[in-house]
Length: 474
Image (cartoon, rainbow, N blue to C red; front, side, top):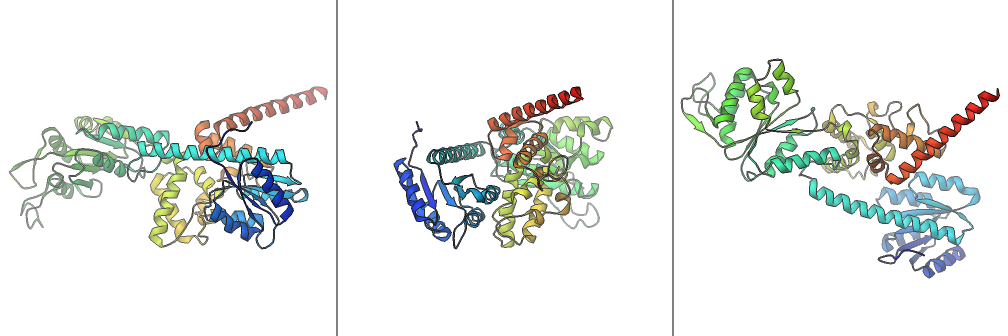
């Protein structure tokens, strides 16, 4: 008994054999589907855009535009539907090629009615699950996402939760993480979620200035206080009054300036360089560093009392290699950003290129990924998507892509079973064994991964028993 559908699913039948097409239409109508037809690839493409089907039953060999070419066109243009290819027994290889291009399944002619219905129902179930997952992801992103921070991995969600809890307070926040992880974006998010969001957000890079210039930049100076001080100048603390001051690379501040910063944090007061007047300010401090400040304290390079003042709330950003499930979304974000910047219309990233992005460890983190995507957008000649050839050589080296296998290149001459096995095991290894994250990256269910793992284990055990028996017999 078929499950009730909230609406009649729409099926498009594309076949140049009129009798076969009409017979299939009759069967599908009797099963309760809405059905439309296309007499060849070109006609089917026009009907597809008009009819917006949930699934397409498409013949592989047709005049004007064959089924695989039609599938490629639809994928390149982002048409959202499931393709099920139909082919004669002698053309199975073409159907397998269509599967590599993104077809959901294939059927062998002459068609068996029950097989058609089973394959069609599975495709529609998968489509419904993908829609549900997409809606759930959108809701999660609405709940957790902050402006300009892209991703919804568990590691990033914990950061979002910390931002959400700390932002409404006036507590000092210390953001820790490797270079390129997005510490400034987190500082912005804390400010924007705080009651100070309408007030100034002022930032200063403490590593970019000498000690003398940094002191003047932070606290301001009076006229004549040093050579070149031609007039009074307000410092960043004054400019950030009632708002937020972001002190980036706080670990590079000199010991003398650390003392002055400690006073501001404790008493909210300071004097300009060369001045006698004590100024009071109300500033919320957010600091960031890629250094291990606790270790710097142990080595006597950073004041312990200042560290404690800064470290009221600590937010640690994970490196990109520890949240690889966000790479696909980040890549899409950067593709859209740089396509607009350079006047291109790049539609996405190919499966092989995405596999290489996922296999790389990203020592430069999100900043490095952004640079790689910008380069790819600039150099890309195929506007449909970024391909493997558009990536830098460091990402195209041997054994980079997941599909290549962990022990060497697999695809030339490999079976589909071997490719799938290496894709699943390689992805699980990459994400530290998390079946949920692996399923998300591969676009399959957790249940399928668990089933496959049992299958691989049974097969490995069987091979070991066979080998053992052969040895014993010899």
